[in-house]
Image 1 (cartoon, rainbow, N blue to C red):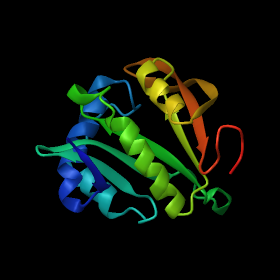
Image 2: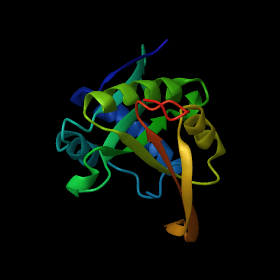
Image 3: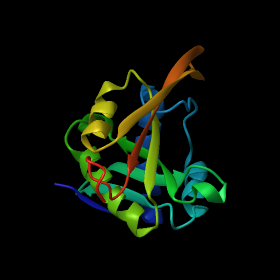
Length: 170
């Protein structure tokens, strides 16, 4: 069994390994170059504490992670966070992403966020199913937004208002 907790510096290597799996798999990010420990350490150490990183851990180590990231440098968007979620390849579809999203919502509210946005590939059906089940809605699709392996790819934007029930009540 695994538990969710705020990441510590000692978790960076496990976060890096799972992120690089996501880069190799080409289903979760437009990044194509795998990252090294120096890159990921800097990513972790230079974050504003408001932009939390959570990890899912079991007895063997990190099995998934989620982070709140800046959406924009403009103060008007201070209450909006961008989301990243990565699960170890052999454990995808086992409920870890759901647990991470449940916890990241709580942390986001505690840290003054009102909304979370994310960007996913339209062909990532498993990810979209998870996000929809967790209250995210599709905002739209950016046509040919990025390039991946020499091909232009679409990117779907999704959003979730925190503390708002499906019927719009707070």
